[in-house]
Length: 445
Image (spheres, rainbow, N blue to C red):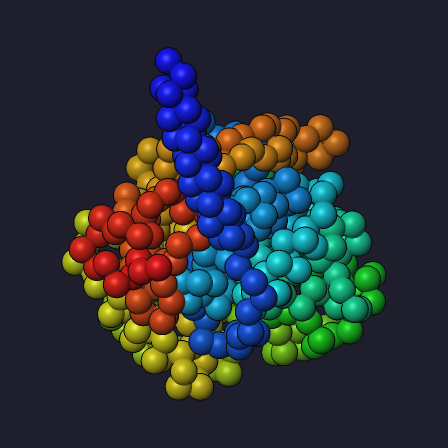
């Protein structure tokens, strides 16, 4: 068997050589390198809530900016690099302030800044807000972010942070009361409790007050900082001053009207500001935002085309949810939205939901990427409960590769914004080179 052994040895050597070459080739797909800065307008944003599990449980880790996710957003899967390659100029993080209070968030912001991605960061809206007075909680979340978590740089908010969202859909009263429950507004016979306007307006004004107090304590000079706003739902509601009403053309802009009226006269919401300067703050830094599940033609008709009463305050679509079952042409909508935002008026652009399918919601739509079957690594992440931040709930999770072929809309989005879903360290093996989607041009090497 001498000659047999020799043959085997030769074969083994060849295989080893080939394997080595392949490994070297693969490892050259590291994180995307630094990219040019991008203007805030037009906003071409993607919402980033990439919970790393494929089960419907809701475990900890909603704050994607926390240091524990660095392997996912940068070093191991490079989600931020993927969004930049797709043509995004902005990302929205839903619980970046106040959901995880102990670890550094500066690394995430530095990475976004290096990529030329503008960050829209939300407070954790389901936080403690006793009797709809959110002042103390929002001040504490702001102080923690600025002092301990790297959100402050060179005397102001980190330069990657361009917009701070005080709340997401406060009209649904998603807060937590002293008993750990979702509060309802004291009843008025005329309306169901969650639609009583004064509770949501008091909540927003007091949260703004808390943010202003935190900025003052941190020595952040007025006007040198990020824009601030609220993302309202697309519901039809009556505004606090009854200027907007259901069945009127302005029915979806109730939240814009609420804040304009509440800043002019906080008494309307039974609130009194602890800080001074709210009128000036609104004039200089406020931005209106709305979450829309509708095609652009409808949002344009209902909001954009009758926005005049709120000018010169800017506005944007803070969450465009592409419907699985609608005839909406997302690619055409995004091109039209971009053109409108470039006109230089009040409209700033759009954030598209969402980067990754959310497996925790059994009714959730499929988003740009599904999770594949290749494990890339793991993360250790945490979440604090609103009433007991001293007891964080933590967990270890596998990080899976990204699969655009089982997801939806990645080609629509990247095509509209002049980007590509390129071969990258986070994609599942072979997908970029062998596209399964018909629109193969969006998956070229």
